[in-house]
Image (cartoon, rainbow, N blue to C red; front, side):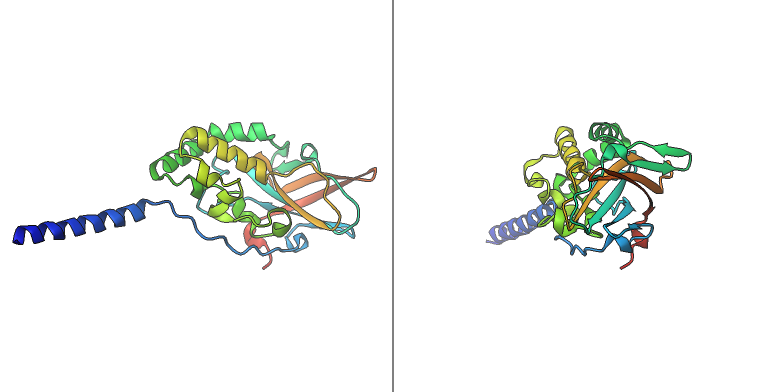
Amino acid sequence: MFSQRLMRICSVVLMNTMIVLSLGCAATKPLPQPRKVIDPAEVSGAVQTSRWDIGAVHYEHFGQGMDYTEAGLEPIFLVFKNKSLQSPEVQVEEVRGVGSDGEYLPYSLDEASALVFASESFSVTTSNASRTGALGAFLGAGLGALIGTIGGGDNIWKGAAIGAAGGAVLGGAAGTYQSSERDLKRAVRKELSDYGWSNEPVPADYTKVGYIYFPAKVGIDVIKLVVRVDGQILRYTIDASDVAKIEK
């Protein structure tokens, strides 16, 4: 009798322990965060004209996801608020990052991806994702987090979950990717592509956002870009602001 009771107690304790352990090991994703849309003109160093405002913000790693700076990239977040009825264009190939020792060309998607994949930061991220099985927590946490901070979020990323829940942005990637190196490469490349600046024209009365990828750790604090519109070629120089300097 006593032995049977003891066995039942042990079974209950063991079951509860397994439940606690399984909950502790389960991949958790924070809820989407509020996405306050701030006029790019409120960003320090932005260009303001009668037709559009253009701001640039340094990427910042918020503790989750791929740390792209450690992976060799300096993503600059470009925010273009078109206040006119025209459709201006900013081509990535015509953007320059001004560093401490000169101007730098932006990386293409292929170049940026190759640089990230060859980095120690990517190896560490792969190891962490494989160990925890929480690949979804890495998607959108690096590049997506900043989109919730300034300009145009509801125009470009309407309905997107910002931050570590950013796997939803990537076509439900968190639910389909496994934690292998191959899958993480696919996820990171898609993140770089989805959050990157595109060369399509900026529609009238619209705010467009996206990252341009430069080399890391070369002191890029100024962006030079060309705006093409209706036969005009306009050149602008923009100071890249830090996230902490964005006016709230």
